[in-house]
Image (cartoon, rainbow, N blue to C red; front, side):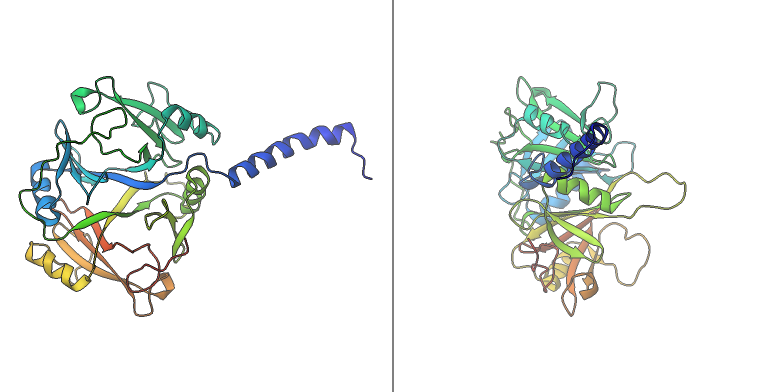
Length: 348
């Protein structure tokens, strides 16, 4: 039998505490997310962008918030929000909407505290208050919310990227859960392509390994696919995922803020050649051999080869840009970022 001195026992206490914390974090996540819910584009002309996405995809206006328009994806409640960029360049707003079952803001805030995510102070900037902060906001009736406020919860990840947590029924509308979108405005005509749901976000971060560890621990995201060094972290039981690109930089330069490189939506019976023809008929022309920034209203296919987890002949991944040059991706409803022609062979 090995005996410990009192000093050795006291020195062991911090290590035991760290071990217990590590075991807790390796077990159940702080918050288990169930699905991707929405994204927002800051555009130069909301009406032009609304007409563009409605004409292409036939999206109904699900809700309105002042000058912001929410377009329904498939049968909802997932949506694409269009908001004025005003004096800023058009962009994909660095906020990722995800949903949880039985949304309870106070319980989520308490759970996040176990991972070192603190409540934002009133003077902290941004939606979440900054990296590793959480803020609960109340959206009032003046902005399409409930009379006594619709709870909206914003979490800043290690890079300051904002994760908005809402109920699985959240549609961006009224009601305590933001789930009242009872008067959708149909698109003027049927769209050329029928988008069904969100597929994934590809996000530029300062340290991909750190982001992967954070999202796996806090939100319980399993590895769904691998594309070279990049991991597709599964969101919910289906095919949705998040992918973080970026390594720890060298030198003294400050890391760039996190940004969303592109958002992917999915559709049934995906045929890349037919989709390109449809896009061309809508005025979205082939990028061809051009290099540099893609520019507005362009399309192209990138073949993801075996060295990046694709099919032997390449998994076709289809991209297009909207009138502001914002990059979108379209894939099959079975696409999970993995192998096979449709990218639908995945780990989880």
